[in-house]
Length: 185
Image (tube, rainbow, N blue to C red; front, side):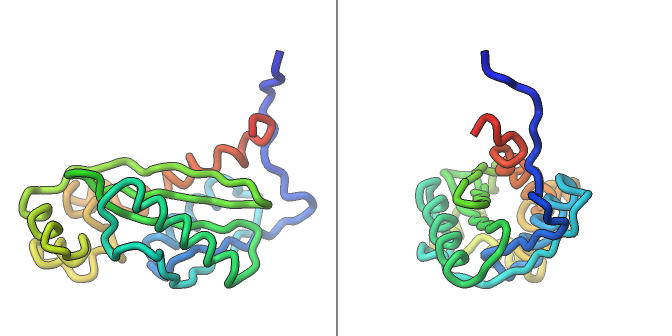
C-alpha cells in the first residue's frame, strides 16, 4: 500500500524563495506571485520577470506549438538566471479557443498544467486567421488598450468576472502539484 499522507514541499531551511518568470508581462508575473503567496504563505517570495523569446510564432496556433513555446521560454530562463523555481507561461490557440500552458521547474522536477480554455468570437478568429496576435485583435475590436497585460481576453469576454491573472493563478497551482505532493512524484 502506498503511503498517501500529505507531505508538503519543505523549504529545506530556507524561508525565502526566488521565483523567476520567463516574461515581463505584469499579468503573468502577478499570477505567479499570487500563486506562490497563496500556496506558501509562510515563506518570503520574490518574483522577477525576464522577457524571453518563445521561439515560436507570436500567436501559437496549436496545443503543441504553445507547449513548445513554454518549454523554450523555460530553457532560456534557466540559462539567464538563478532561482529556486523557474516559471514559463505561454498562451495560444487551439481551434476556436485560447488557453495557456504553465510550466514550473524546481530542482530538475517539472510541474505543468494547461489553463482553462475560452471560446473566441468569430470576428476574433477571423482576424487571428490573418496572422494578428490575440491581444492586438482584442484591443482593436473591443476598444481596449494593451489588454494582454491586464485582464486579457478572459476579462473582456467574461465582462471582468474573471481575469487572465486569476485564471492563470489556478493553472499555476495545478502545475505545483508535484511540489505539493512530492511523495507521489
